[in-house]
Image (cartoon, rainbow, N blue to C red):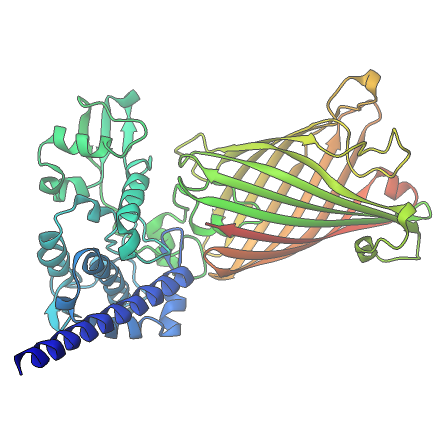
Length: 521
């Protein structure tokens, strides 16, 4: 009789454990989905989240979980996510607000339900998480709802990848020039109050704290540096300068974007800030230019795939790949979209025409939205100009060097102005070999409006003078829109009208249709 009882007892325990794992797996998946939808660059879209009611099922799971059935990284990851979600839940209960400190007892008075227990947020952090898991890296993943905290992620912490996630977020925070502020050529350093409040967790003494920081920094701090602690920013971590923030929020946060390119910079036609360390930006921009002039329609389709990697928070590296197809028709006999048809082989040509490296640098701490991007495009198609074979032109035979200077200026809560100045040298090479070395300095201005946290509407104007013996130019004006489907995927459309001296002289017309996809990984 004892053996059957033992067997069924073990079976019951196994089923219970499996049920707990299945339940927490669903919790991690749902948390990941919620954060992906409502967190962007460390900012929480409280307005949309409050309207959706999507948080409540997760709060219910946190209250009902059997913590005793969880162990190791599963328990640790669950509690990290639970803390961050409960902070959001408490902020939503009082939203809109300027700061979590405006709520009496936010951390040490108001009770939260966790695994059948009533605890404050401070008790959850200090008495449960830090006591059970004395890991200083937790201070860089537990987010208090303030801008002074390391930013909340747009993903959930997962048991199977927790060590990598903790290390990655710790490195990201400790290499952030706004979080660790090196001053006077490295002779002094200003640290977050986190290192003051929780000094014991980092070793206690100043040298121990610096040693901990240096373990994760790409450029170590001087061990004899003078240490100070800057004032903690308790402003609520709402999207900066977006419609999701109240006017009071914008005043508290300064209306600007975080140094890693968050806030409204993330919704730009061109993102001006460098992307954060360890992240990727992949953009596929499709441009269809078509003109009718001098009895002919010429249509050029260009698809440029750009990839960037955050080598550091200030230096990004990557590449561009360009594909082109062109078609020429009699004026009035075809539409611009006929470029996607190759019925008339004599008037049609296509190919992958260019590839090359690029780098983006954000050189100034004081100007987090200013960056410089430079790309060198090398021709990889055979005779792209058609000079040797008599084929139609699809690109230049020589390399192109393209350098762009970006900056972004928030205007109130729902608008911003983007400015771009470029230096462009096309078809580089000896004159005797037919290269034209065309030099231009395009100028672009974009005014953006944010009707809600996921939508951007903008107007664009650009002018490009060609500095050559026979002066030429082009200009274009247009309008576009962008929608952020998830924090990792955005789609944009843009229509412009185009003109230059030749088109004007023959009373022609020209314009572009553009479709862009951007992925943030």
